Image 1 (cartoon, one colour):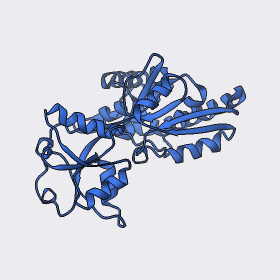
Image 2 (cartoon, helix red, strand yellow; image 1 turned 90 degrees about the vertical axis):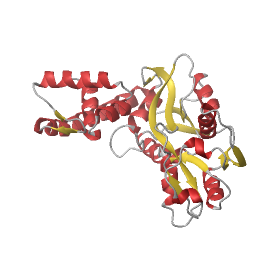
Image 3 (tube, helix red, strand yellow; image 1 turned 180 degrees about the vertical axis):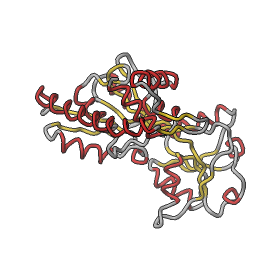
Amino acid sequence: MDLRQLECFIAVAEERHFSRAAQRLHLVQSGLSHTIRALEADLGGPLFIRSTRKVDLTPAGRALLVEAHRILAATREARLLVTQVNGMARGQLRIGAIHGLAHFVDLPSSLGRFRQQLPGIDVQLLLDGAAPLLAAVGEGRLDLAFTQPGGTGAGTTSRMLACEDLVLICAPGDPLAAGPMPELAALAERTFVDLKLDWGMRRLVDRSFAALGLARTISFEVNDLNLLMDFVAQGLGLALVPESVARARAGDRVAKPVAVLELADPEPPCWEVVVAFRGRDGQASDRVAARFLDLMVAGDGGPIRYQ
């Protein structure tokens, strides 16, 4: 039994689903299944009750879950103490992030907890578009970046943080709001409000319509998600945004409301967020960046919301 096996076990136990756990751990599902089988063989009995729809813990699995959390917590604390002795008490962490990240990663909370644990680390934050951030990581000007997937150079890797379907938002009085779920192709004749071209979300929507051989009309280009939704709420156009962004607006009792509709397409456009950094096999080569990533996925109420 090793630490990686325990991490895999905890992910499956918490997700109650092998495919979601594999996505959370950035593994292929077959590899995760092999790891769990090896752990069960080592411990001499099943840890999960597997069915076609979900995964439940056996009594042995429930007992192990408590100990697994304790072991990993102790390991993280030991790692922190050693790295501080080895010089991590001083240093620098340079982070980049795309706009609109707050719906997926609570970066201020993570930085606050990081500062409490390592007050001697100087943290710098840069907000920019996806392409410049990935280039900055590849060139060593940033230690890590929360961004959209893209081409990464040699020595750069990434971890998937979220994959969320885009949904349609429109004014509550729009005829679409009272109808069935629309297909993407049926929206091409309508007028859109969208973000500027340097936003990854805008490029994702553009690619989705282009893949259908369709063009659309964009009457308003803005540089802020809240402003985009304000325009939509006033009936000035439609927009496609990640579901969590739309649901947050729909639940806002102060802002003018929008209607939220899921797309009827079998595979609607998916908005992805990754964290990119220098390293390999999903592990950061920089000690400070690695410590920050460990803190984020520690399982103690951390901010990353795996989809």
